[in-house]
Image (cartoon, rainbow, N blue to C red):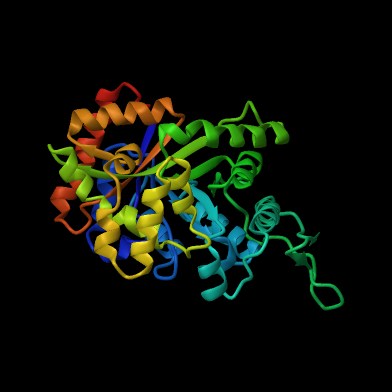
Length: 350
């Protein structure tokens, strides 16, 4: 199992995050990930990280499917891969209906069919094929007009950039197994590993890709403290936001994950309080057990034990999301170094 660093959507919140990315590179981390919602865009951040590093990969976790045409994303992937000398990993996600329709003005219906067509067009772009498709969501070129079936002018460094999909539901997991090289997971736990990996394996079989490598990337909150309970307190706001407020009452993927993990009543209470404006109440409603199953909390020895659990549950890349983001750079670097020592002691370091 490898280590990576996930900045999420927060890279621009700290000017010294560039130094943190460089320290991750020095420590042997495999990837720096960055994402987007309706604030910072991931492409600008990843280009910046690429310009200030030389060996660590850069990855989008995620680029939003409704935010860009598939041809534009293919151009972006080819450009970032060239700029980084072959270090780019393309992670995609459909986002949710609130962002897709409220921010991008793109209907959210049938996100899996849209993602399948989206990936197909990106792969055609990177292979420098003339792109002519007639799909349910994308038709290129548009019929009856002056549009031509074009191919990418740029010559990509690689005709296949590693592709990752964010997925939670069974059909989405199968699609990831079928068309992608890896899966971007949040709130991953050993208890849910069989559920997820079974659906991914079904997708691999359907595509005849059982023998190919597949990267299971689990983003985990990290909080270092001798007292695990106090470390868990550093994670509560993060869990409350995702389980309670990342989406609507009708559609919240992370709330659904908590329900599947056996925390149905807690998930309902967290959401009720968060959506009613009682964020402190939502925070208090987050069970320690939910945090412990899906995070790295406690001291070095405890973290090493939990890393073994994640590796045994099929995780091949552990993406660390630091919970002491507001602290000084030195403290955050020490968190990275503690994680590396735990990783080395865990017996699963690759």
